[in-house]
Length: 160
Image 1 (tube, rainbow, N blue to C red):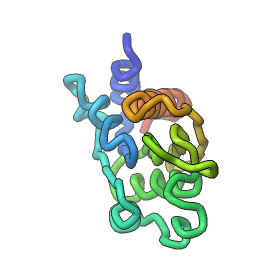
Image 2 (cartoon, helix red, strand yellow):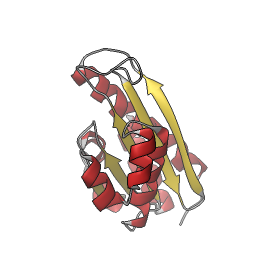
Image 3 (cartoon, helix red, strand yellow):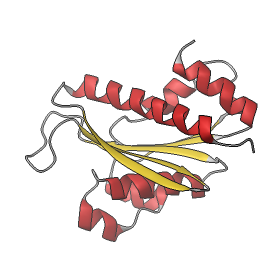
Image 4 (tube, rainbow, N blue to C red):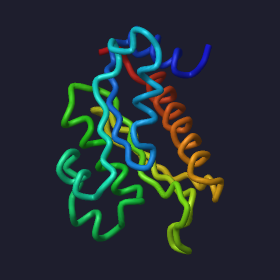
């Protein structure tokens, strides 16, 4: 059974709705979660917030956070995940913001992706360095990692 099917089954069993807030993946996580029939029982909504303005308007990311840390940061990933929860009826949210490439800088290299996972209990964030694999591969790895984060968090959650 693939991870999306496992997420679907466990989220339905626990009556947990999921929201996604995505930047560099452009909706790939939401797309993966809705590939299977029955996904409407666990997929609440997805936000594709590619620009900073969209992050502020749709997810309530603070302009001060963006100015202080940049869009590719754990701080912004945390606020994106929290915003996805507060702007939806979901009880679990995942967020992704990163540099898929090409490009990047010494300070924020290609392949750096920050993730956030939020529940009513709080938010966690982390950074993965996928490396300069090329745009498509970085986005695929980010999608897959976000699905793993959702699966791990779902296993810890109590039914709603």
